[in-house]
Image (cartoon, rainbow, N blue to C red; front, side, top):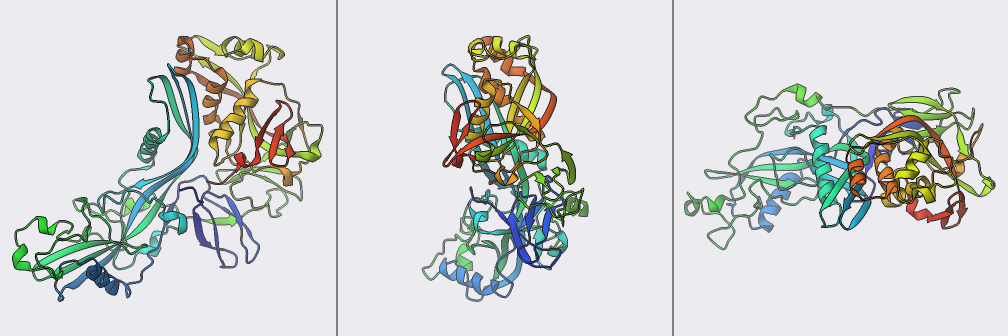
Length: 515
């Protein structure tokens, strides 16, 4: 599930259809040229995949499925009711970082991860993941007013975001590839994660034949039968004859013969077109609105001069080419930033990568360790006296974290570890301008970058003795100061070279801003 999910909307300026990658903050209308941003950036949203079948197409399709799958019903079988049920799924994408200390040594691994799971198992519980379905389908922003049609049911979320996040974190822990050896210390975090809801269409069909009533569940996109709650196919039903026509007399009282069918329509008592509740509960409209956030599109313009800012999809930092101001987009507001860059000799050949620079204190009460200066760090980290021998021992500890979201999370961590291991005093200066045509997009907010600091600290400490394990178990990072820095790398075609640490890495490993 590595392809970008696309969201289809209409331009608020010209009404033209446009699409953008899910999670993008800004984009441009190809028809009128308007630069737009999502008002709800940083907020979990709901999306829906509309059913591909209209109601006139459903009866012929249902009869075709019954015939092709040899469903044992009489020719006089009638279709009593057809409902479109939208089943909710939580969808998570993000970078997973995992560290452990065991008898076989220290291990740190990272990966970009995609995961979906059902948010309501009451209907077709075996349909528990979207799998690859969403990669080829366009999402639409969910608006409850658009789905208050006769015969449409929106299932409620059975657990909230907090519960969904914990479940996703548990699944990530089970999914990550780690050593089978016993761990003395381990920790996992999701960084730069996005969690949202996707409603998927399931067609519920109630058929009757003589004194029987059967319920079938059909995939509203792929037009195939789905498994029922009991784990059997909702279309699987063995007949007593070879003609594929059910004999009511021969199947009376035979429970096995009715496997895969239900006697009544699920959620049939719920108001059509509104959020359904469990059959034992009373429908409440507040359940519908408790997680209903409508997506809004606004103009994306410089707060100082009013000119359009460049649409860079996943970027959170925007540079105005008219008045040369730099803006941080955070929680729907624009905040001014000072352009700061690490000085380099050959700037014409440079590619600039954004980093959050944190001045920190690292404290572990159980190990009795406080790391405030380079001298403190050199005494505790592995080979610290050698690696930091040329640095000022009184200088505060600084950690650089790339402000990037990337497919290759492991390469991102490796780059951060290389830069932070030597604690070099880099020449930082203010700039009036920066060639942003040579700058990578900044897409990881400072609070997410702070969550990544622990794995950077683990990577540079490198020890696995008892005192180090005590340190890993409860160390806390206090941020004293933070700033956005543009770090120059020499462009060597297929590779980028860090002039300060003599480290090079493939450009492809920094395939940024795409989940």
